[in-house]
Length: 332
Length: 302
Image 1 (cartoon, rainbow over the protein chains, first blue to last red):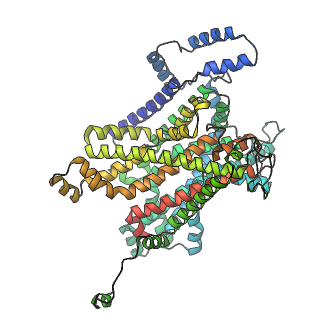
Image 2 (image 1 turned 90 degrees about the vertical axis):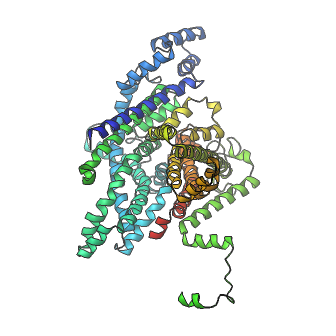
Image 3 (image 1 turned 30 degrees about the horizontal axis):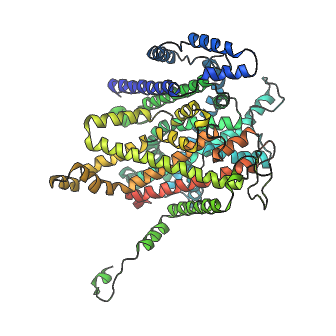
């Protein structure tokens, strides 16, 4: 990979982050809603201070947050803040900053996301490769192909079905939450087991909800690669089926799938967030759910921006890693 | 084959079967497409017959007895807020279809227009449209939609605004697909011939290129409907939909916020989930089937 290409990719990354930040900056300013006014209006209704004070409080708040400055000035400060990963204060949990809240819930989401994405990517690609491999035993192909039908089932709905069958009917696993009600978090082995139990259903929902897509695209790749000359050549050389499958067929079909993974990252992260909200796990998903319910706009915008930036950075990282996997790109 | 070719064709009058028969024959070969169309027809029948027979008021809160499990009177049960879930499914299905068709149709239309402009006029027009699409594509669209839907006044959120929010960031995919197709089409000989015989730009676009692209546009349209239904469903599940409407995602959001499974009201989230699986599943099957129709290369290798 040449230096020129690296610079171009990095420039593109900056453009994506800039575009997302700009959209998130201007949409609320076009909107008729005023987050501060809504929040303090709510506080005023529940008692505390008189309506005359309300205007004064809002004015002083606006001055403190720089909302009385001209728009271009605000925009400039805002871009600077984004660069320093400063997303401002949470309205609902003031004086916590959005970055603090993100730091608290991020480890949960990353744990769930990493495990499920890797597992569904591996399982889906193996099943897809088998579904398209003409020499695979019939029962194996018959087992792998129906997984394509899962493309039509979003992870959230998979989560509801799993909750119903495994959590509600069979009562094997808990119905939601991070740990059992009444348990105090501690460092014992039982607590860890309890924690893990609560993660199983969301993880299964995410794996089964995204595996179909991988099976489908890998089967398509597999069908294309079967006809290639090098696969024919390997067969005529008399290599064993397993060797051809692993080194000639799977390895070549996997490469575009890695690019596919980079492209799918946005969807993957979004699904994980919504599934977390569904199960009430303490991650970014529940944080977003809570923020939407409480009209906590700075938190919503902070989450959206943070994830957008994270996804864009990860995508670029995958593209930079690609030459390590594909020698042809490395040498050209 | 050779015998058939040698026999005199006079007596054996070969009749081309009617187009309906041809379509049915193709569907027998393309089983996924057939199954998808069948499910979609079933859902349409359910919605149309349902809209004619039910009282739409029952789909809204405080109209029937609350928390009743499925029974003869209420085939899908009723929920915590006193909605008859059968009526809610009928109305919700109609609203989902509306959002899907409006958002999918508009998204495809914008995509086709921009794709044609970019590919046909080239140079800086192409560069601008392509760059904007490429910059917007990696941004997780749903999250931006969350920002837009969240910034709206709750009273402004209706089925129509939902569709508009979805369209706003859903035209990049079809634009890039159509652009790529027009670019390959532009170099074909029949276009060159038409150009040499003095056909105008618009004539070439509408009479020469557009008809060839119809299968791709159809496939893009179904894909757009799929993603529009998907996006609006996700927004509603997050509680950003028009909360009063019995949109499928809204019902799931409501069920989840009332702890439906904890309280034993299992039918409340399950019914809309099954409906959503049928909708998205049929669209996915049709999409795969159309892909096969549009790309003969895939068809041959199957």
